[in-house]
Amino acid sequence: MKQHIYTVVLIKLEGKKTVPEEVKFNTRSVGWFPDAESAELNVLNNAGDIAEGEYYDFVVVEKSPPGHYAYNSYGIERQWFRRDHVQKKWKRMNARPKIVTDSKVRGFGIG
Image 1 (spheres, rainbow, N blue to C red):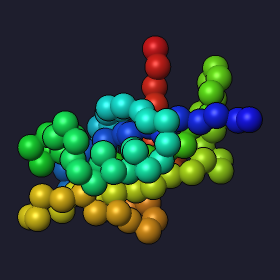
Image 2 (cartoon, rainbow, N blue to C red):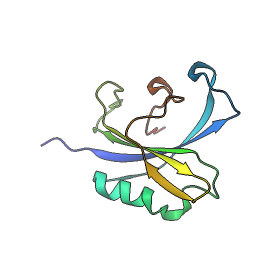
Image 3 (cartoon, helix red, strand yellow):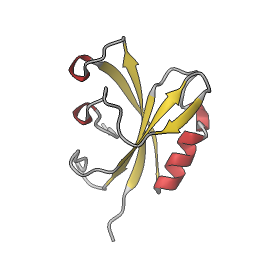
Image 4 (cartoon, one colour):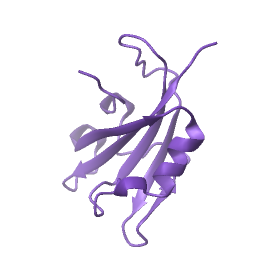
């Protein structure tokens, strides 16, 4: 039986760029969960104030397999959320934000 973890990665866009290749952003891995439901519930409830006072713009929950260098951007399952800074809520997205390319997000980092 193959096991996975679900990582929670925060994303902060820097500046007002609109072309994905020019966008700079910071990412921060804040934790992992044994199942997708727990990870997503923690995001939607802003557990531990992961928005950090409305600092972060997006969250991605990624399904990651075990192993050394196990991260593979092809076929990895992701659920994206955007921060509504007015309502102060995380909102589920149907697709990744166009401004963030898959190649720029590398999930959970160790070491």
